[in-house]
Length: 153
Image (cartoon, rainbow, N blue to C red; front, top):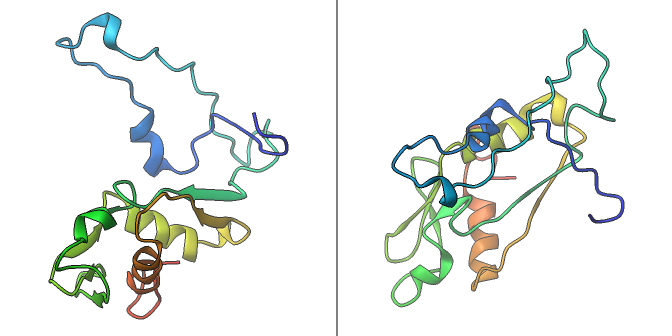
């Protein structure tokens, strides 16, 4: 546990609830399944006092390559890479025309973190070991998550 960092089991957003599901496939041997997580406490509401200091996180940190977007930056080596240009979808394309796209609910989640007043005090960060940090920074500046021209974060 890192000093000063609060760990809770309350879902940050309903979008993350799918991550909490445990494997149910009968084809997976019981000894290869991860342990079932402990039962979640009820989500704090205004009707019940919260056991946590805040119902929203103070910090949300994302990994980039293979988590927030695809392909990973190293996969663009060769003909591709910077400069990146906007794509009509809000994603970006590299100089070879390869599209760097946000994965899953990433765009909706980033939009919510940016626009929802409930998250006004929430900071958003990245933690990445990308091989091309300059390319990743350019993608973050150019990927759209809201109205045209708003940028990723």
